[in-house]
Structure formats: structure tokens, C-alpha cells
Length: 203
Image (tube, rainbow, N blue to C red; front, top):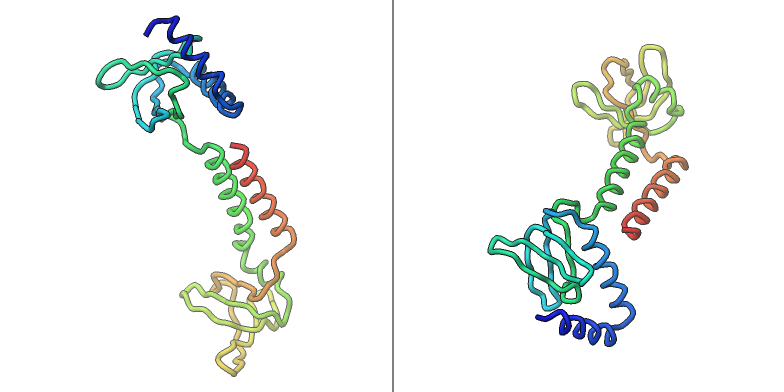
């Protein structure tokens, strides 16, 4: 293909394109010119064909050179539908948002792992709780009082309330049942979700 014919073809294509297509090609051109030599690429052409190889170069004549296993191939920018670097995450913003949410929820749920004694102190008398012992038994109970050694409860078994004392050294965890979500946690969760959505849409 001669240079004169190629330029003529390019002009004919440009004048028949919609503005959105010109914008897409401009972004594609800038991306191609910024690629480092040797970067692994996957190219999808406008007719749906796929090529995978190492990027060689791109020039101001809108020509991209790709090294394939079978040899060297040349593409015009306007015949490329998309190109993607294979050495980069496909959705980097999503990955960053996922890491942020993992850290956020880890910090939120770490609040539940507070010292058992402090959990008991922070729970109001009369609250319904679930007590999990170090022997892996679980009891649903009404908290009566908290002492230096443990907690006094009424264990709920069907329709019966059985008094019982649990020493702190036999308690693995105490969880308050039917507890409303703390407003601060709601704000943190909503804020984290909005950041994640913004990162995804911004990407």
C-alpha cells in the first residue's frame, strides 16, 4: 500500500466518521504511541479478528507494528477496535476498590473481636446475647450482670430461663442479638461503597 493511497484512504475514512468514533480513534492513537516496546498486547480488529503478540512500535502515520509468533504484522489505527496490555490488570480501579473494601470491612468487623470482658461491660443488662464458650458450645441468654470474674445470665431454653454463671476464661465470645447497627458503621459502609462505585465508573 503506497503512502499516498494510505493517506487518501485515511482522509476518506475520517470524513465519514461520527465525532464519537473520531474521539475513540484519538484515544486509541494516544494509547498506542505511549506503549513501551515489547509490551504484550491483544488487538481486536473492527471485523472481530484477534491478534496477540509483542508491541514493536507505532508512528505518526497511524501504523502499529506487532510481533506475532508467526512473524511481523502491521495494523492501521482505524482498523483496530480495541487493544489491551496483557501485563496489566484488566480492571485496575475495581481491584483497588476491592482492596479498599476488604480493608474497610476488616477494620469494621475487628470491632467485634474486642476483649470478652469489654464486650460484656458494653452490653446492657437485660440484652439478649449469644455466648460461645471455649469448648464450642453456644447459649442464647439474657444478661443479668457483669462481675470481675464473669457474667450472670438466664440461659434461654425453649420457654425456660435457667440461671447460670460464665467465667470469662471459659467464654470465647459474646454477641448481642438484635443489636441495631451503629450509625458510624453505616456511614463507613456507605462511604466505602460510594468510593468503590466511583472508582469503577471512573475507570
